[in-house]
Image 1 (tube, rainbow, N blue to C red):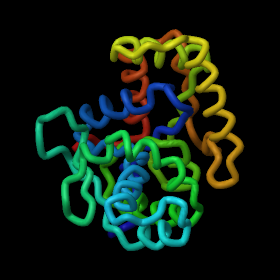
Image 2: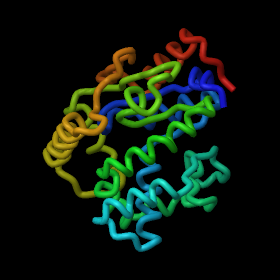
Image 3: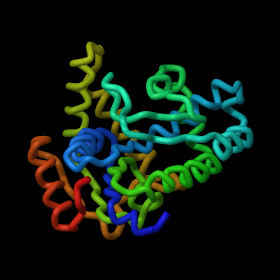
Image 4: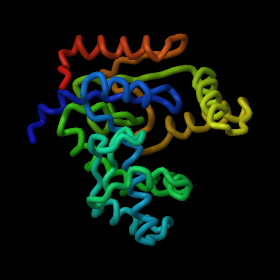
Length: 234
């Protein structure tokens, strides 16, 4: 697989609730590209750990499984609300990785350096295919620094908290704005100060702030950047 395929990789990094996934899905649809939220590979390996009864606290065992398990992300095969298909050892596990028991354990599994290294290789293999919009926190800096276009999407923590607060209310959750704000501030601190792949813009990333901009305005800005880079739609 030629490395030139990285020319058609678009990375969107940024803090939690900055709107990365929403914009990436829209941009991927507009271009006919694969949408790849790299967080799904950590959920996928966590599901594999739990399904195979590997102790979550056993770093060596989790790392070994992360190295051996086959994880792939493919275009959505069903019109059931999914953005793509998440395959684990050839089986469709798109919705299983979203289960609460996976959510409860993914942070522990994802924190292991060996797991992150193993999954880095799997993420790069998907990126090498090209024609993909990849979302995460270290995609432009660590996973695919060769990407044709690197975006760092930011917004004030207050604005991000307001967005997440509205989303949670719309989902029927009983939440307090101050709690949402505090949780995001804590997440920012953890992401920015972790030893492995901390959250930060790539040196050649284009930094965009989405405060005071609608999703439609941001989508147009992104598409214009894609055109400026000469990245072609499928």
